[in-house]
Amino acid sequence: MQKLLIGGVGSIAAQRALLANEVLLVSLWSNQADGPWEIIMPGIIARITPPKFPNRNFVLTKFGATGDGKTDCTTAFRDAITACNKAGGGKVVVPAGEFLTGAIHLRSNVNLEVETGATVKFSRNAKDYLPVVFTRWEGTELMNYSPFIYALDQTNIAITGAGTLDGQSGPDQWWNWIGRANYGWKEGMPSQRDDRNALMQMGEKGVPVKDRVFGEGHYLRPQFIQPYRCQNVLIEDVKIINSPMWEIHPVLCRNVIVRNVNIRSHGPNNDGCDPESCSDVLIENCVFDTGDDCIAIKSGRNADGRRLNVPTKNLIVRGCQMKDGHGGITIGSEISGGVFNVFGENCRMDSPNLDHGLRVKNNAMRGGRLENLHFRNIEIGQVAHAVITIDFNYEEGAKGGFTPVVRNLTVDKLHSMKSKYALDVQGLPNAPITDVRLSNCTFENVTDGSILKNVRNATFDNVKVNGKEVTNLAAAA
Image: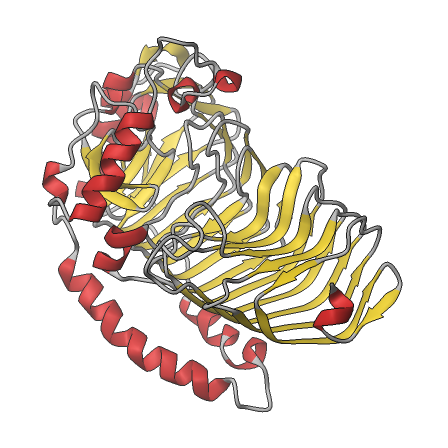
């Protein structure tokens, strides 16, 4: 039985101790002749290594599973994972076929391998994700429905293989809980509105997490994949479709790799990959076609995020393709714990249904400190709004007592073919966005120029908008 330690005091304290030293080092590094790509990123890459598993296979069908898409295989998944864990680890193999299941809980040293031709279909019955588990929902901790694939306090876990994970979500199940007609909700049906508001208030008031109990009779949708306080996590090659909300959501994890994953899910809040309060994360060679942000880097919401106060740090995104979504690479908005050392390179973003390319969301209720954000070699076909967006007016905007910070953001070798705005960068009068550096960037077919408000220390080197060189803030606007 997994041990439930709400709050994770030990691991969080260790991360806080390391953070003070890291911030000092980043300040020193920024003054060196070589840039962060040469100094910081190699160290991150060196630390990120995939977990290794013993050469043992536990084939799901040998534990009573039937791949007809109708028989409930929840017990078979649990028994196979338990046997694999007790044997010292290996692979739980899902062979070709369709396997229906409720929640899957991974354990240490277990690699869930979904083979080519295999589909894991998740139950549409909300009761199959009970009892409630300790989780995080839009940046606030609570007890809620289990994520479809969940792990708590485990080491060396993986989800691999070229098969499919199908959440079976749609307007007639899960998506309608958001309370919007375009996702199947009709007048008189339940929705998440009251529960969401209640959870946010609990977070603000500091209600103990054990007393923030939702689940049955409530309407907060579970995430698809959520490793929580885990180390050495690999998610590779699988295809993910039809998610209830966020698809891949590692929380308070260390050493995470998301590689060659193909995500296609257009429901509400269907973010592709949302690492939250994690360190040493690599997201590479993935395809995102989503109903919300393709990648959204997070670290907790408002008072509850500040209570834990664990940033996401040392994160690399490379070689990814972004199609539909709200933002390609996004930071925020649940960002109260801060974000440090983000690197994004060699990514392609292109869709009339992609609102932003590089996007940062913060405000005076979140108050997160976001710094050392670096991007290069970004190719953008088209986006609907702005190629680069930094927004302190998001949701509550200036209505809060916490100063949002974004500083030391660099973009090099970005090429965009079509957008409404090149830049939409808006700080607050008492919280300007500082130290933004663009170099070797070209923005073509920009219809409305740029929006720049409350920005300080912005520099432009070989930057062109519609063929005209930009050298300062006035020229950029």
